[in-house]
Length: 438
Image 1 (cartoon, one colour):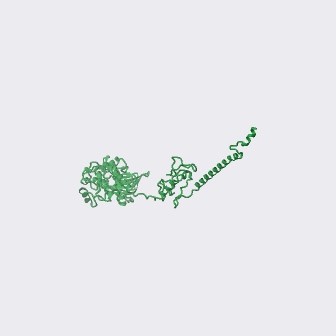
Image 2: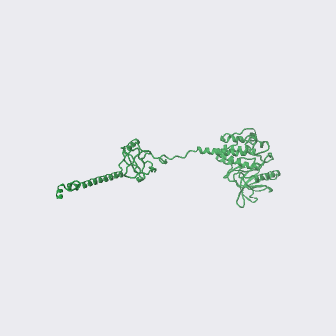
Image 3: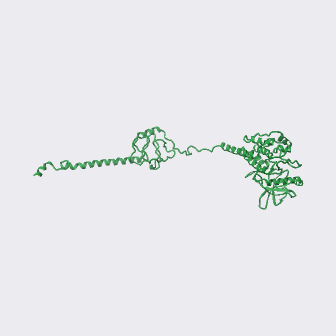
Protein backbone atom coordinates (compact mmCIF):
# COMPACT_ATOMS: atom_id res chain seq x y z
CA UNK A 1 0.00 0.00 0.00
CA UNK A 2 1.38 3.40 -0.95
CA UNK A 3 1.44 5.61 2.15
CA UNK A 4 2.22 8.91 0.42
CA UNK A 5 -0.28 11.63 1.31
CA UNK A 6 -2.69 12.68 -1.46
CA UNK A 7 -5.63 15.04 -1.70
CA UNK A 8 -9.09 13.70 -1.11
CA UNK A 9 -10.97 12.74 -4.25
CA UNK A 10 -14.53 13.64 -5.08
CA UNK A 11 -15.81 10.19 -4.18
CA UNK A 12 -13.99 10.07 -0.84
CA UNK A 13 -16.01 10.70 2.33
CA UNK A 14 -15.23 13.76 4.41
CA UNK A 15 -16.41 12.40 7.76
CA UNK A 16 -16.36 8.80 9.04
CA UNK A 17 -17.79 8.16 12.47
CA UNK A 18 -16.47 10.90 14.76
CA UNK A 19 -13.38 11.53 12.61
CA UNK A 20 -12.87 14.22 9.99
CA UNK A 21 -10.76 13.08 7.01
CA UNK A 22 -7.97 15.28 5.62
CA UNK A 23 -5.81 13.32 3.20
CA UNK A 24 -5.41 9.95 1.51
CA UNK A 25 -2.58 7.91 2.91
CA UNK A 26 -2.88 5.10 0.39
CA UNK A 27 -5.06 2.47 -1.23
CA UNK A 28 -4.82 -1.31 -1.43
CA UNK A 29 -6.79 -4.41 -2.33
CA UNK A 30 -9.06 -4.11 0.70
CA UNK A 31 -9.83 -0.41 0.73
CA UNK A 32 -8.49 3.10 1.27
CA UNK A 33 -6.58 4.50 4.24
CA UNK A 34 -7.15 8.14 5.20
CA UNK A 35 -5.51 10.60 7.54
CA UNK A 36 -8.14 11.82 9.99
CA UNK A 37 -8.50 13.51 13.36
CA UNK A 38 -10.99 13.47 16.20
CA UNK A 39 -12.48 16.41 18.10
CA UNK A 40 -9.43 16.52 20.40
CA UNK A 41 -7.06 16.79 17.44
CA UNK A 42 -5.67 13.27 17.75
CA UNK A 43 -4.55 12.05 14.35
CA UNK A 44 -5.49 8.59 13.16
CA UNK A 45 -5.02 6.34 10.16
CA UNK A 46 -8.54 5.28 9.20
CA UNK A 47 -9.17 2.33 6.85
CA UNK A 48 -12.48 2.11 4.98
CA UNK A 49 -13.39 -1.12 3.14
CA UNK A 50 -14.21 -1.04 -0.55
CA UNK A 51 -17.99 -1.01 -1.34
CA UNK A 52 -17.88 -4.27 -3.30
CA UNK A 53 -16.10 -6.13 -0.49
CA UNK A 54 -18.43 -4.66 2.12
CA UNK A 55 -21.30 -6.67 0.56
CA UNK A 56 -19.41 -9.95 1.04
CA UNK A 57 -20.38 -11.50 4.38
CA UNK A 58 -17.35 -13.76 4.35
CA UNK A 59 -15.12 -10.74 3.93
CA UNK A 60 -16.91 -8.93 6.73
CA UNK A 61 -16.14 -11.86 8.99
CA UNK A 62 -12.50 -11.69 7.98
CA UNK A 63 -12.41 -7.93 8.61
CA UNK A 64 -13.86 -8.52 12.05
CA UNK A 65 -11.02 -10.95 12.79
CA UNK A 66 -8.49 -8.30 11.73
CA UNK A 67 -9.95 -5.81 14.19
CA UNK A 68 -10.01 -8.46 16.90
CA UNK A 69 -6.35 -9.27 16.20
CA UNK A 70 -5.38 -5.60 16.42
CA UNK A 71 -7.08 -5.37 19.81
CA UNK A 72 -5.22 -8.40 21.18
CA UNK A 73 -1.71 -7.27 20.23
CA UNK A 74 0.16 -5.58 23.07
CA UNK A 75 3.31 -3.51 22.94
CA UNK A 76 4.59 -0.67 20.81
CA UNK A 77 5.36 -2.73 17.71
CA UNK A 78 2.09 -1.85 15.97
CA UNK A 79 -0.22 1.13 15.67
CA UNK A 80 -2.70 1.15 18.56
CA UNK A 81 -6.36 0.57 17.66
CA UNK A 82 -8.45 3.68 18.44
CA UNK A 83 -11.97 2.90 17.17
CA UNK A 84 -13.88 0.67 14.74
CA UNK A 85 -17.34 0.11 13.32
CA UNK A 86 -17.86 -3.38 11.89
CA UNK A 87 -21.60 -2.95 11.27
CA UNK A 88 -21.40 0.21 9.17
CA UNK A 89 -22.43 0.19 5.52
CA UNK A 90 -18.71 0.30 4.77
CA UNK A 91 -16.85 -1.15 7.76
CA UNK A 92 -13.91 0.87 9.02
CA UNK A 93 -11.41 1.03 11.84
CA UNK A 94 -8.95 3.70 13.00
CA UNK A 95 -5.49 3.24 14.45
CA UNK A 96 -2.98 5.67 15.90
CA UNK A 97 -1.23 7.64 13.15
CA UNK A 98 2.48 6.81 12.90
CA UNK A 99 4.62 9.65 11.50
CA UNK A 100 7.62 8.71 9.42
CA UNK A 101 8.39 7.16 6.04
CA UNK A 102 7.93 3.53 5.20
CA UNK A 103 10.98 1.31 4.91
CA UNK A 104 10.28 1.04 1.19
CA UNK A 105 10.30 4.82 0.71
CA UNK A 106 13.42 5.34 2.82
CA UNK A 107 15.44 2.80 0.82
CA UNK A 108 14.08 4.12 -2.47
CA UNK A 109 14.98 7.71 -1.57
CA UNK A 110 18.23 7.28 0.37
CA UNK A 111 19.58 3.93 -0.79
CA UNK A 112 20.16 0.62 1.06
CA UNK A 113 20.75 0.61 4.79
CA UNK A 114 24.10 -0.26 6.32
CA UNK A 115 24.63 -3.52 8.17
CA UNK A 116 24.27 -1.93 11.62
CA UNK A 117 21.07 -0.03 10.77
CA UNK A 118 19.49 -2.94 8.90
CA UNK A 119 20.23 -5.28 11.83
CA UNK A 120 18.76 -2.78 14.31
CA UNK A 121 15.55 -2.45 12.25
CA UNK A 122 15.35 -6.24 11.92
CA UNK A 123 15.82 -6.72 15.67
CA UNK A 124 12.95 -4.32 16.44
CA UNK A 125 10.69 -6.02 13.88
CA UNK A 126 11.53 -9.46 15.28
CA UNK A 127 10.66 -8.30 18.77
CA UNK A 128 7.41 -6.87 17.45
CA UNK A 129 6.52 -10.12 15.73
CA UNK A 130 7.01 -11.92 19.05
CA UNK A 131 4.13 -9.85 20.47
CA UNK A 132 2.02 -10.42 17.34
CA UNK A 133 2.48 -14.17 17.44
CA UNK A 134 1.86 -14.33 21.20
CA UNK A 135 -1.57 -12.85 20.43
CA UNK A 136 -2.23 -15.82 18.13
CA UNK A 137 -2.00 -13.72 14.95
CA UNK A 138 0.07 -14.12 11.78
CA UNK A 139 0.52 -10.94 9.73
CA UNK A 140 0.93 -12.75 6.37
CA UNK A 141 1.85 -9.55 4.46
CA UNK A 142 5.02 -8.26 6.11
CA UNK A 143 6.93 -6.18 3.52
CA UNK A 144 8.85 -2.86 3.34
CA UNK A 145 5.76 -0.77 2.56
CA UNK A 146 3.99 -2.11 5.67
CA UNK A 147 6.79 -1.02 8.00
CA UNK A 148 6.83 2.60 9.15
CA UNK A 149 10.04 4.08 10.59
CA UNK A 150 8.72 6.28 13.36
CA UNK A 151 10.96 8.36 15.67
CA UNK A 152 10.28 5.76 18.39
CA UNK A 153 11.23 2.78 16.22
CA UNK A 154 9.76 0.62 13.42
CA UNK A 155 6.02 -0.03 13.48
CA UNK A 156 4.16 -2.84 11.69
CA UNK A 157 0.94 -1.74 10.02
CA UNK A 158 -1.79 -3.10 7.72
CA UNK A 159 -3.01 -6.38 9.17
CA UNK A 160 -5.44 -6.51 6.25
CA UNK A 161 -4.86 -10.20 5.54
CA UNK A 162 -3.78 -11.18 9.04
CA UNK A 163 -5.04 -14.60 10.05
CA UNK A 164 -5.10 -16.84 13.05
CA UNK A 165 -2.21 -19.23 13.50
CA UNK A 166 -2.81 -22.51 11.66
CA UNK A 167 -5.51 -21.17 9.28
CA UNK A 168 -5.20 -21.90 5.58
CA UNK A 169 -4.75 -19.24 2.92
CA UNK A 170 -7.95 -17.55 1.85
CA UNK A 171 -8.24 -17.54 -1.97
CA UNK A 172 -11.50 -15.75 -2.53
CA UNK A 173 -11.82 -13.74 -5.73
CA UNK A 174 -10.77 -10.12 -5.23
CA UNK A 175 -8.85 -10.86 -2.07
CA UNK A 176 -5.08 -10.41 -1.88
CA UNK A 177 -3.08 -13.25 -0.40
CA UNK A 178 0.23 -11.38 -0.08
CA UNK A 179 2.87 -9.55 -2.08
CA UNK A 180 4.87 -11.58 -4.61
CA UNK A 181 8.53 -11.69 -3.61
CA UNK A 182 7.81 -11.33 0.11
CA UNK A 183 5.28 -14.06 0.88
CA UNK A 184 6.34 -17.54 1.99
CA UNK A 185 6.23 -20.74 -0.12
CA UNK A 186 3.51 -22.24 2.10
CA UNK A 187 1.29 -19.28 1.27
CA UNK A 188 1.73 -19.95 -2.45
CA UNK A 189 0.85 -23.61 -1.97
CA UNK A 190 -2.19 -22.79 0.16
CA UNK A 191 -0.81 -24.58 3.23
CA UNK A 192 -1.40 -23.52 6.82
CA UNK A 193 0.30 -20.33 7.94
CA UNK A 194 2.43 -20.20 11.09
CA UNK A 195 4.76 -17.68 12.74
CA UNK A 196 7.47 -19.07 10.44
CA UNK A 197 5.50 -17.52 7.56
CA UNK A 198 6.23 -14.04 8.90
CA UNK A 199 9.88 -15.03 9.47
CA UNK A 200 10.23 -15.73 5.73
CA UNK A 201 8.75 -12.33 4.90
CA UNK A 202 11.06 -10.67 7.41
CA UNK A 203 14.07 -12.30 5.76
CA UNK A 204 12.98 -10.97 2.37
CA UNK A 205 12.44 -7.53 3.93
CA UNK A 206 15.95 -7.52 5.44
CA UNK A 207 17.39 -8.46 2.06
CA UNK A 208 15.52 -5.55 0.46
CA UNK A 209 16.70 -3.09 3.11
CA UNK A 210 20.32 -4.10 2.44
CA UNK A 211 20.20 -4.21 -1.37
CA UNK A 212 17.20 -2.13 -2.43
CA UNK A 213 15.71 -5.08 -4.33
CA UNK A 214 13.65 -8.21 -3.71
CA UNK A 215 15.73 -11.38 -3.25
CA UNK A 216 13.62 -13.02 -5.99
CA UNK A 217 14.01 -10.28 -8.58
CA UNK A 218 11.24 -8.78 -10.68
CA UNK A 219 8.59 -10.08 -13.05
CA UNK A 220 4.95 -11.02 -13.23
CA UNK A 221 3.14 -12.46 -10.24
CA UNK A 222 3.31 -15.97 -11.68
CA UNK A 223 7.08 -15.73 -12.26
CA UNK A 224 7.70 -14.34 -8.79
CA UNK A 225 5.59 -17.00 -7.11
CA UNK A 226 7.43 -19.75 -9.00
CA UNK A 227 10.80 -18.40 -7.86
CA UNK A 228 9.65 -18.21 -4.26
CA UNK A 229 8.72 -21.90 -4.29
CA UNK A 230 11.47 -23.41 -6.49
CA UNK A 231 14.50 -21.08 -6.68
CA UNK A 232 17.07 -19.91 -4.17
CA UNK A 233 17.13 -16.21 -3.25
CA UNK A 234 19.77 -13.87 -4.65
CA UNK A 235 21.60 -12.29 -1.72
CA UNK A 236 24.41 -10.52 -3.55
CA UNK A 237 24.94 -7.20 -1.78
CA UNK A 238 23.69 -8.34 1.60
CA UNK A 239 26.43 -7.64 4.19
CA UNK A 240 28.40 -10.69 5.27
CA UNK A 241 27.28 -10.18 8.87
CA UNK A 242 23.62 -10.54 7.84
CA UNK A 243 23.74 -12.93 4.87
CA UNK A 244 23.76 -16.26 6.83
CA UNK A 245 20.84 -15.18 9.01
CA UNK A 246 18.81 -13.88 6.05
CA UNK A 247 19.41 -17.12 4.17
CA UNK A 248 18.16 -19.11 7.16
CA UNK A 249 14.98 -17.01 7.24
CA UNK A 250 14.36 -17.74 3.54
CA UNK A 251 14.51 -21.52 3.92
CA UNK A 252 11.81 -23.29 1.90
CA UNK A 253 10.90 -25.54 4.84
CA UNK A 254 9.26 -23.59 7.69
CA UNK A 255 10.82 -25.93 10.25
CA UNK A 256 14.33 -24.84 9.21
CA UNK A 257 13.73 -21.14 9.85
CA UNK A 258 14.74 -19.52 13.15
CA UNK A 259 12.11 -18.32 15.58
CA UNK A 260 11.31 -14.66 16.03
CA UNK A 261 12.88 -14.69 19.50
CA UNK A 262 16.10 -16.20 18.14
CA UNK A 263 16.09 -13.58 15.38
CA UNK A 264 15.65 -10.75 17.83
CA UNK A 265 18.58 -11.83 20.00
CA UNK A 266 20.88 -12.57 17.08
CA UNK A 267 20.11 -9.32 15.24
CA UNK A 268 20.72 -7.29 18.40
CA UNK A 269 24.18 -8.86 18.67
CA UNK A 270 24.95 -8.11 15.02
CA UNK A 271 23.72 -4.52 15.34
CA UNK A 272 25.91 -3.90 18.41
CA UNK A 273 28.99 -5.48 16.82
CA UNK A 274 28.58 -3.65 13.52
CA UNK A 275 28.00 -0.34 15.29
CA UNK A 276 31.20 -0.90 17.28
CA UNK A 277 33.03 -1.70 14.07
CA UNK A 278 31.89 1.58 12.55
CA UNK A 279 33.18 3.44 15.59
CA UNK A 280 36.58 1.70 15.33
CA UNK A 281 37.14 2.56 11.67
CA UNK A 282 36.27 6.22 11.98
CA UNK A 283 39.30 8.45 11.26
CA UNK A 284 40.88 9.91 14.40
CA UNK A 285 40.40 13.56 15.19
CA UNK A 286 43.20 15.83 13.89
CA UNK A 287 46.01 16.01 16.43
CA UNK A 288 47.39 19.29 17.63
CA UNK A 289 50.96 20.20 16.69
CA UNK A 290 53.70 19.35 19.11
CA UNK A 291 54.22 23.04 19.82
CA UNK A 292 50.58 23.58 20.84
CA UNK A 293 49.92 20.30 22.64
CA UNK A 294 50.90 20.23 26.35
CA UNK A 295 53.00 17.19 27.23
CA UNK A 296 53.76 17.79 30.91
CA UNK A 297 57.50 17.38 30.23
CA UNK A 298 60.23 20.02 30.24
CA UNK A 299 61.61 20.82 26.83
CA UNK A 300 65.22 19.86 26.33
CA UNK A 301 66.97 22.79 24.68
CA UNK A 302 70.56 22.59 25.93
CA UNK A 303 72.82 22.16 22.90
CA UNK A 304 75.79 20.92 24.97
CA UNK A 305 74.65 18.88 27.97
CA UNK A 306 78.08 17.35 28.68
CA UNK A 307 79.78 20.71 28.84
CA UNK A 308 77.13 21.99 31.23
CA UNK A 309 77.62 19.00 33.52
CA UNK A 310 81.41 19.48 33.58
CA UNK A 311 80.99 23.17 34.35
CA UNK A 312 78.67 22.34 37.25
CA UNK A 313 81.13 19.87 38.73
CA UNK A 314 84.02 22.36 38.44
CA UNK A 315 82.37 24.81 40.87
CA UNK A 316 81.07 22.71 43.77
CA UNK A 317 80.86 25.56 46.23
CA UNK A 318 79.00 27.99 44.02
CA UNK A 319 75.40 28.34 45.12
CA UNK A 320 72.67 28.26 42.51
CA UNK A 321 69.30 29.95 42.57
CA UNK A 322 67.36 28.97 45.65
CA UNK A 323 70.55 28.26 47.63
CA UNK A 324 70.87 24.58 46.59
CA UNK A 325 74.28 23.38 45.44
CA UNK A 326 74.70 22.12 41.93
CA UNK A 327 74.13 18.41 41.38
CA UNK A 328 77.32 16.47 41.05
CA UNK A 329 79.25 18.91 43.32
CA UNK A 330 81.09 17.61 46.37
CA UNK A 331 81.54 20.86 48.31
CA UNK A 332 79.56 21.88 51.35
CA UNK A 333 76.39 23.90 51.15
CA UNK A 334 76.94 27.66 51.39
CA UNK A 335 75.79 29.28 54.61
CA UNK A 336 75.04 32.66 53.14
CA UNK A 337 72.77 33.84 50.41
CA UNK A 338 69.22 32.75 49.80
CA UNK A 339 68.04 29.80 51.94
CA UNK A 340 67.84 26.46 50.21
CA UNK A 341 64.51 24.77 49.38
CA UNK A 342 63.09 22.58 52.17
CA UNK A 343 63.59 18.87 51.84
CA UNK A 344 60.82 17.04 50.03
CA UNK A 345 59.47 20.08 48.20
CA UNK A 346 58.94 19.78 44.47
CA UNK A 347 60.63 22.22 42.12
CA UNK A 348 58.40 24.55 40.18
CA UNK A 349 58.40 23.39 36.53
CA UNK A 350 59.80 25.92 34.14
CA UNK A 351 57.72 27.19 31.22
CA UNK A 352 58.08 25.48 27.84
CA UNK A 353 61.05 26.64 25.90
CA UNK A 354 62.90 28.14 28.91
CA UNK A 355 66.11 26.35 28.09
CA UNK A 356 66.21 24.09 31.15
CA UNK A 357 67.19 20.48 30.89
CA UNK A 358 65.77 17.94 33.34
CA UNK A 359 68.32 15.85 35.13
CA UNK A 360 71.17 18.42 35.11
CA UNK A 361 72.46 20.78 37.76
CA UNK A 362 70.61 23.76 36.26
CA UNK A 363 67.07 23.48 37.55
CA UNK A 364 64.10 25.71 36.99
CA UNK A 365 63.65 28.76 39.20
CA UNK A 366 62.95 28.09 42.90
CA UNK A 367 60.27 29.85 44.89
CA UNK A 368 62.83 32.24 46.33
CA UNK A 369 64.01 33.33 42.91
CA UNK A 370 61.00 35.45 42.03
CA UNK A 371 59.54 32.99 39.51
CA UNK A 372 61.92 34.00 36.69
CA UNK A 373 63.26 31.30 34.39
CA UNK A 374 66.90 30.26 34.53
CA UNK A 375 69.17 32.10 32.06
CA UNK A 376 69.91 30.43 28.75
CA UNK A 377 73.44 29.27 28.02
CA UNK A 378 75.56 31.61 25.92
CA UNK A 379 77.52 30.70 22.87
CA UNK A 380 80.75 30.44 24.92
CA UNK A 381 79.32 27.84 27.28
CA UNK A 382 79.41 30.26 30.31
CA UNK A 383 76.46 31.66 32.17
CA UNK A 384 75.99 35.44 32.14
CA UNK A 385 76.73 37.35 35.36
CA UNK A 386 73.97 37.23 37.95
CA UNK A 387 73.54 40.72 39.47
CA UNK A 388 72.02 39.39 42.65
CA UNK A 389 74.84 36.91 43.17
CA UNK A 390 77.40 39.64 42.56
CA UNK A 391 75.76 41.86 45.19
CA UNK A 392 75.80 39.00 47.69
CA UNK A 393 79.48 38.35 47.09
CA UNK A 394 80.31 42.07 47.36
CA UNK A 395 78.42 42.29 50.64
CA UNK A 396 80.33 39.32 52.06
CA UNK A 397 83.63 40.79 50.89
CA UNK A 398 82.93 44.16 52.54
CA UNK A 399 81.83 42.54 55.81
CA UNK A 400 84.91 40.33 55.94
CA UNK A 401 87.18 43.29 55.17
CA UNK A 402 85.63 45.37 57.95
CA UNK A 403 85.94 42.50 60.41
CA UNK A 404 89.63 42.04 59.58
CA UNK A 405 90.31 45.77 59.92
CA UNK A 406 88.49 45.87 63.27
CA UNK A 407 90.53 42.95 64.53
CA UNK A 408 93.81 44.62 63.61
CA UNK A 409 92.77 47.84 65.32
CA UNK A 410 91.83 46.06 68.53
CA UNK A 411 95.18 44.23 68.58
CA UNK A 412 97.13 47.46 68.23
CA UNK A 413 95.14 49.23 70.97
CA UNK A 414 95.86 46.54 73.55
CA UNK A 415 99.69 46.57 73.09
CA UNK A 416 100.18 50.44 73.19
CA UNK A 417 99.96 51.15 77.05
CA UNK A 418 102.42 48.39 77.94
CA UNK A 419 105.20 50.02 75.95
CA UNK A 420 104.46 53.41 77.52
CA UNK A 421 105.02 52.10 81.13
CA UNK A 422 108.40 50.53 80.30
CA UNK A 423 107.59 47.28 82.03
CA UNK A 424 105.70 44.56 80.41
CA UNK A 425 102.48 43.99 82.11
CA UNK A 426 102.25 47.60 83.48
CA UNK A 427 104.51 47.11 86.57
CA UNK A 428 106.73 49.70 88.43
CA UNK A 429 110.26 50.46 86.96
CA UNK A 430 113.16 48.67 88.65
CA UNK A 431 115.12 51.82 89.58
CA UNK A 432 112.40 53.01 91.93
CA UNK A 433 112.62 49.95 94.14
CA UNK A 434 115.48 51.20 96.46
CA UNK A 435 113.64 54.44 97.20
CA UNK A 436 110.68 52.56 98.38
CA UNK A 437 112.77 50.33 100.62
CA UNK A 438 114.38 53.41 102.20
